[in-house]
Length: 582
Image 1 (tube, rainbow, N blue to C red):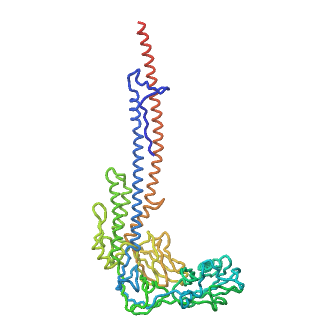
Image 2: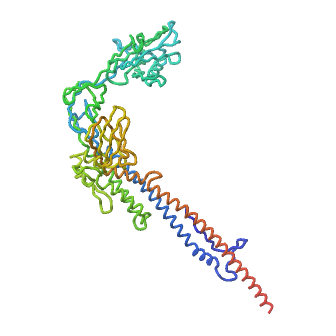
Image 3: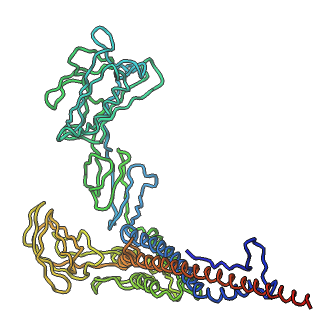
């Protein structure tokens, strides 16, 4: 915090009335101010430095925010920003099937939906007039069971079985003896009992529907929570398994439970069915209408069955989205550069700040350089090869035509320029993750021991030729800490030897640089901010000391001039007395 210099303009006596210069004719307050101003020059220099530090700190905070925004853009670019896929369909109305895609998926797929997956359902049975004959009551608060004497007291037990053969029971009493109480009790069973080992939730959803018509408008609808046949079949069951003779008024058939099986009861009047469809002429069956395991990276959504013809779905790289994501990175990078250029100009808050200049250089070098570890045969090896160029003021420009041509021709190669990638010569060894300091290049491996789901072991050879003996669990090998392989995680599914070529794209490299610069408490900017805070704290102490010294000096000078004025006044009075005597 800056301290301001306070100068008094007049000397005063105890009554607060100024008598400066009355005897001497000298403006003593101006003399005091002049002397204090001269003496305060060192303090003013301290205040100027303190203000400059504060301004620099503010500029660094703003720059850090822009770096963080850019880092988020780069993270998006290196994960999903360049992997978006667009799907076109020969069915413009999307009547039977739609699809979404991601990753490296591409190609055309001919589909025909024979039938969609449905839920098992128990609903009221209707008579010839359309009135429900069971599972319906006149009021949501009307009892759903009575005792043998017709009183709505006591309790009643209902047993339910889902399509996976999971059997559970609910017991109603006087507190919840109504259709809503039964529905709530059934839905509560969807959550597994944490106190029962191996317990699973009941796969049945209960809904009370108010039809608004007829003598019994409140109807109970039971639906399986998942589509398709379960492990126990395609039906669900509800049974009145009350042991004490209570009479249910919903027309639910009686049944008995033996172990995990219900005998009798009311079963689904709409059976569940699996989806059936063809993919390039091959007939497939799934329990869900969302199919994500037929083609890698593609999710098909089945909408309606009985399709007479076929639908062709074509998956291709989404060049429009990829271009937009590239431009987001460029725009935010340029905004950061332009802000820095303004602050670094003559008279700016970061002018002559070599530390900040170095930070900006690190980011620029990482983003506009070559991707580390890509083989010489790589189609693209730098952002420049994809149309990115640096302008005279340090901002970036994108040749959209060059980028889109390259991305369309080989989207994976384009992604590798920006993201971390790893190509393995063995299907049993793949990279799960790598760290910012993991060595790039060719990493050799020789997996000598492997147990499915258990321990693995072997050797890893770093790009510099150093070999490391490694062991791991859960089919995972981790690069030893303190070595060039630190941060490397490998998934192992078998033994064998080979090599893995690890590369770090320019987007990931720039994001890593920004992380090191902006890390809370430990980053370069945090260290600079700490140093600024410490400097300003020391400056504040020096300024306070200087101000105290100036205050003391001002008081002393004012006292001296006041004494001089008093003395002159006395001498003048004495002189006048002598003159009057003569």
